[in-house]
Picture (cartoon, one colour):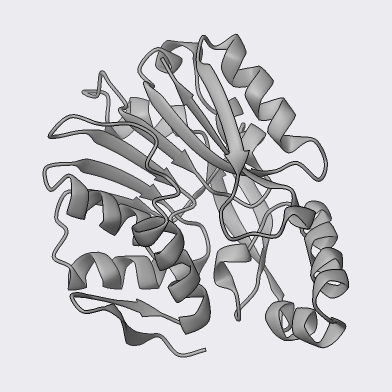
Length: 249
């Protein structure tokens, strides 16, 4: 699909390949404030894992103009849109990496969905469950239209602590870590060294509990000393068991 510029609000436009998905995510972030989990300082350091086309990064830059942000997005077409949007909105203090984050360095097969690129995943086993639920909740035709045309792309993977140590060793505090990675949340968290955990002050993670992902994430974060809460994701039918897990020190 072609990358094109769309208007999402009177003063906000962005580049996307999927207008319907961009509108849904815009509402989730800018209007429903799904990821507003903490009040940050004037110049926070934020990490956006699973940045997609960059709407969360742009929202945080709008809210905190002095913020410095690291954005990670492995899907090449999403990464292109992310960079176009950062340039279009003249964001100079965000660094984007074309990587998936995981527990180990290497590469992995990413299933890319051109009609709903934000659903692209390294965990196709869990995504198949979501697709079946779409078929049950809506229709086979609707699900096939959304998830049709999928293709597999091998993408690079590395640990979050690798990037912090090699390129951002000056960072002492991570004010907010946002994770939206469609089923590999535990792998992302597994890529944080013990020496870096104390830097993280707030975390927000979108996670499915179809296979117990929410409970595993909560248990890990509590073991790291966080106060953890969760709530059902707004605007998502209960059948999908999608939650927003928040953690703070």
